[in-house]
Length: 342
Image 1 (cartoon, rainbow, N blue to C red):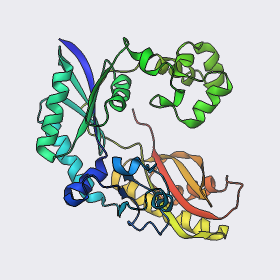
Image 2 (image 1 turned 45 degrees about the horizontal axis):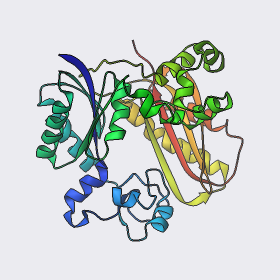
Image 3 (image 1 turned 180 degrees about the vertical axis):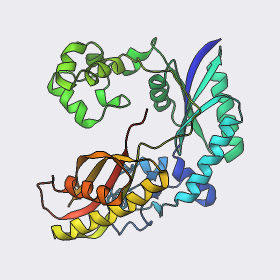
């Protein structure tokens, strides 16, 4: 018996849940975001595959989505419904008897000992479908990284195995931000060093990248490009790394005093979330999206982990003061990142 990590990802989860509520929407371009009014400011939370064919994707402004897919059906976000559907899926996975690590509403890692992981993946898909009528894709790997990336090759509603044997063929020529954990900014920094592809990064000298990215991050980047990662899967409940609140304004805010007042309001909401979680915050991050659509973030490490609303507010205002641009603001966000615990 061989140990495998399987990654289960529900296909177009939020849109699929909405179609279950409204079967007449099946096959149509469906866009979920904001309060469902594409004439207002807001961003896409998810889009059905039919909408994605028109270039609609998560994070896209609703107004842009409406221009790209004028016949799309726009729906408001309904968190309680999605949370309930997610709970049904995760319960169904646990009932199979495997160790299940929930990673969010629509994905989970599963530890499996099997000589036929594809058969287990089909069993998982069948169980999820029977319990919820939701389709899922399953990635198979020797570790979490491989399984996570494999899922993308299996979508939609498919199964894919990604291991050391086919890693280079599948990923070697792709840009570095195709890797889980490497974002656009890191990819740009790597490109400035002449590291353009996953293959380039896998062949890079860890010591050289340590000099550029730090003694921990540099070698980790190379390991990730080589497909090396942890295979540990734990059944402990999913614990978010932080809580955040944000708001989009229908009219731009040009008065920075008003911006500060909105940050205070958001910080108070985040403080309530932190108190409900009973986990102290160690860092506060403020997000500002300027008109028309440029987003920037600034963070502030708190003097000590805390749940004190006054300290969280002060941290948010300190982070806000690090923004030098005072242009019109269309969105603000405040996020508390939980302090690390042993």
